[in-house]
Length: 113
Ligand code: SF4
Image 1 (cartoon, rainbow, N blue to C red):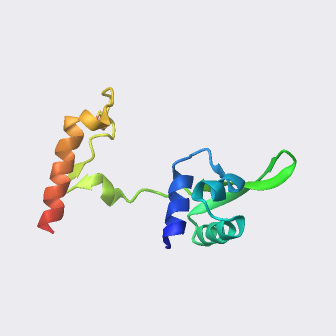
Image 2 (cartoon, rainbow, N blue to C red):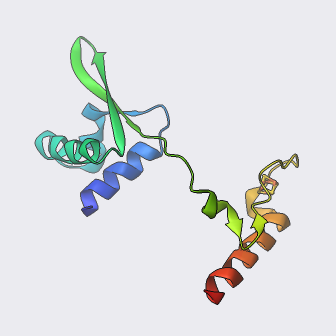
């Protein structure tokens, strides 16, 4: 994936409601033709979907990131499941000791591989 495609994908992934293609090329500071090529690559690779949309009577598209199933292996640190599943605490990701412990566990497991 080229840097431009990665940048475009990040912009699209950050907006669950989608990004207008007519806005994307302005955000990326590329011309509309280059933006079309980037979008086509992302569409062909299945990373995004494109929905037809009319803005002020002009046809454009809304671009949305495809949702992908999570690899269950990414939720495990060794045998330990990520604590966020079934967590009913008031969430503060940055300060969460449970999550931090789990991430240490993950680092230990990764180092041991
Ligand atoms: S980050 Fe901590 S508080 Fe938030 S859902 Fe995960 S375990 Fe619960």
